[in-house]
Structure formats: C-alpha cells, structure tokens
Length: 465
Image 1 (spheres, one colour):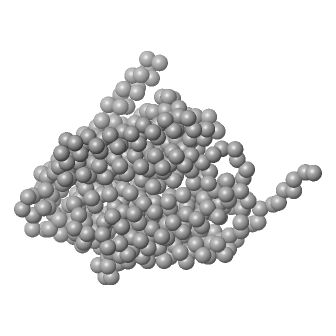
Image 2 (cartoon, rainbow, N blue to C red; image 1 turned 120 degrees about the horizontal axis):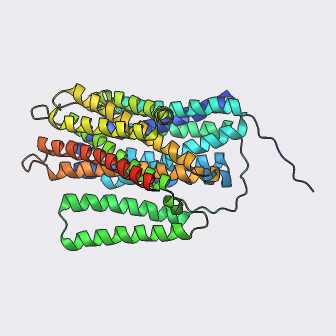
Image 3 (cartoon, rainbow, N blue to C red; image 1 turned 90 degrees about the vertical axis):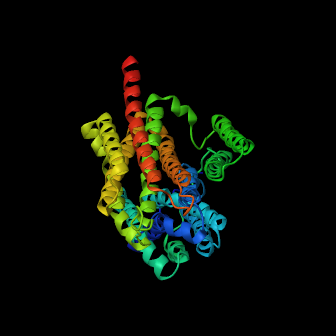
C-alpha cells in the first residue's frame, strides 16, 4: 500500500501575527540586560566580571541550542518543540523575575537562552504551511519583529527597572511570551515530524555548554578572587577535561552538533578564527560602554540612569541590525578581504580613539555605532562565505559552527572587559578607574588589529596553496 500524503494545513494572518508577536517578546526579553547591567550589578552587589555572566549565560545556552533546534523541530514537529522551548524560556523568565540573588538569576538566564531555537522553529512552521513566496514575507516579518524586540528591550528596560523594579524587566516580557505561546498553540496546526536517521547529539550539547560555563565562571574566579595556584590549576583542569571530552564526542558522533572535521577546510577555520577575533573585540566595547555611562558624573563617568543608557545604546542596536542584513551584499560587491580589512581598521581606530576621547556622550554613541557596523558586516560576510564554501548538504553545519563561534566571541570579549575593570578598580570606592577603561579600549583595539594579521596570514597561505 502506498503512503497517503497529507497536504499541510494553510495558516492565516493571525497565526503569522502570533509568531511575530512571540518573536517580538523574545527579542525584548533577550535585550533588557545590556542597558540595565550596571543597575543589576549595584542591586545584586556584584563585580563587573560577575555581572558580565548575566548576559553571557544566556549566550552560552543559545550557542548550544542553535545548531540543534532545527533537527529537534524536524524530528518531533516544529509546533511541539516550539511549545517545549517556550515553556523552558517562560520558566527562566519567571525565575529571573523572582531572583533574590545572582546564582538564581544566572539559572534563569541559562533557561532563557533556549529562546534562540524559536527562530528556526518558526521558519520550519512557516515554510511547511505557506507557499514559497508568502513564506518569504512571513519569515521577514518574524525576523524584523525579533530585531524590533531587541530595540524595545533596550528602550524599556530602564523605565521598567526605575519605575517598578528590575524584576519587571524579566517579568513583563515573560508574561507576554506565555500569553502568545498559548495563542500559537491554539492557532497553529500541528506539523508532522520528519523521519530521520540522524541522532540528536545530547552528549555534545551538555559538554559544550559545560565547557563554556566552566570557562567563564572560572575566568571570573581567577581574575576576581585571586585564587591560589592550586585553585587556578583546578579550574584549568576542569575546563580542559570538558573541552577534551567534547572534542572526542564530536569526532565520534554519527550526527555531531558541530562537525569538527569541517574545520580542516581553510575557508571554515579562517572564518572561525576571524569571527572569534572580530566579535571578541566588539563584545568588549559592548560591555565597557554601559559601565562608563553608569559611573558617577563627579569622576570620569556620566551618572546616567538605565533609561538614558538605553537611549544612548539604541543607535548602536539599530546599526547592528542593519549591518547584519548587508554583510553578504557588501562582501559580494567589494570582496570579502576588503570588508574584513575595512572593518578591522574602523574598529581599531575607533577603540584606540576611545582610549583618549571618552568625555562626551556622543563619542561613546558614535563608537558603539561604528563598531557595531564593522562587526556586523564582517561577521555576516564570513557567515555567507562559509555557507557558499561548502557543499549544499553541509550548509547548516557550516553556518551553525559560525553562529556558535560568534556567540562565544562576544561572551569572551565581555568577560575580558569585565576582568580588566575588576583588576583596575579603585580600592577605596570599588569602582573602575579611568585607566581601567583606557586599558580596556586599547585591548579591544589590539584584538581588532589582530584580525588584520589573520587576514594577511590567510592570504599568504592561500597564495602558497
């Protein structure tokens, strides 16, 4: 007997609208931490290094979920997995909203990080239930609303934190996510799972997330607490053991989360190294600027409220969103090497200039815009290059590897910047000194300049080949 093929149920505007509003709420929840980070540090009584973990734990979970979200949706059905993930996100959001201390807030952020899987799952649902032309419009709407949510979170984190409390920054978007998920459950038809022989790489997911979290928490302890040599060695052993275990698992897995064999391709490892360097530099800038905005105005800071910080960070958020959408086009028209060199030069010049010129708000706003554009265009151009440098069947693996590298770079840069501020804190006040910020900006510039060296080295190897 032949199998009966059931045509997918067509979805209407209300279903697309529900997915879009869900993406808007998720983008809002994801972005509230950046402008409010100085306030959270004060409220929780934690150092900059510990504060940087608040945003980075979400990034770590996102880096782990991103490569497997689509596989989960195909295997179990996009709607079912989306609802599962939103239940986890909602639990994380409520936990963060009720968090009495840093450890509970960090756990909430870890759970919220699975929101990264919502976008590929939304794409699966749209493509299954709409014709190709209409699905492109719907996908664009979902992406635009997710990006818009990031701007909403940047703007409204301050008014919520200052008008109510910082707990509501997490609470209100979470309530919206819960309500919208219920609407999606009601309106969106079930999509049948796709039979697949590929396995989900659960051990790889656990080991990668454990490696990243152990590294960042260990980095905070080593740089902030002044651990004795034995403690430093113990942290190093744990991180190396987890990382080694992950590499072994990925090399032996039938369907690895990240196919490490692809790194043997020059286009892939070049792209990964450059993406890590570029995003690490940007991660440092993105962390340092809100800290400088929030410092008391009677010193070298500006004494801005969380609301004002959000307003000053908004142009950078808009610039980053725009640059992400034009990176591929810029690389095709100007050439990848040109895009990378220009981006590195712009970032290096901007951060070095910041080291000596950071006495006016417009200087910091302009710096955030320039570095966001440079990092966004370069990282997206590298992602496009990786996607076109491999065979079609490997496109998903290649792009996932670059996405993971990009997230790790931003998180690493933020932690390095935080460690520099901790090391340069004034013993009397506990606040970062101006020289600490100067060191941070110079370090970010040197890291950005390192990408020029990588580009030069890869060019020479390409010529020899």
